[in-house]
Image (cartoon, rainbow, N blue to C red; front, side, top):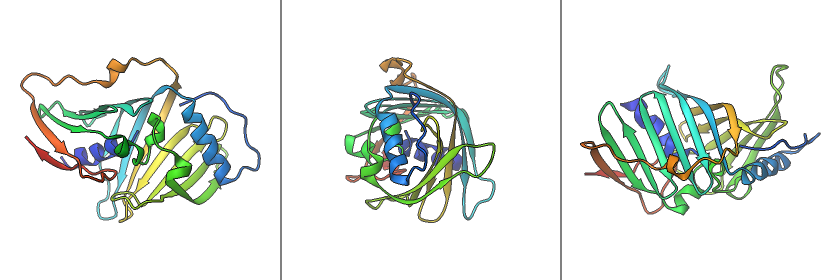
Length: 235
């Protein structure tokens, strides 16, 4: 159960692209601009994903894997194979479904909430340059990788988010790994694999029909929602 809540928090926090020329001698701010421009030009995307949780007080935290879809206007769909669950949003409502428990958590999603989630730009919301300060910028030193790594801090305080580290492909400016770090130093890492973009995904993919007989819990979001915040469930 704890692992499920870790990943629904990521789903709430969380949310690819045409080739751009390589920027030689790029600065961190230039790379941020290229990342933002890339995702602004992307209507939708899909990828396989792997998630890991590294806790300060817990070794060998929960892992997740599956397939994720993004579309502009805050739409996303996380189909987990491990654990068995789904997180789906049409940009207005969010559903978290656990088939094994036959339980669905439902919450309204405001534009303000979407824009203040750390990976909102993946779903066409938010702005890296506007919402984050650049802390560090590095280039990978491994001969097997050709990446930029940018470390960001939110300009406004967020519960559950202290820093955001993005690993970015130098040639495409696709985000291939995102590390969300909370104030305690716990890390939720998501790697994106086999990324495909501009597939003309239907809006219906981002809608969820509640199965007959499923238990439905309504999540009341706080007035100033924070990334990873689950609100208060009510039946």
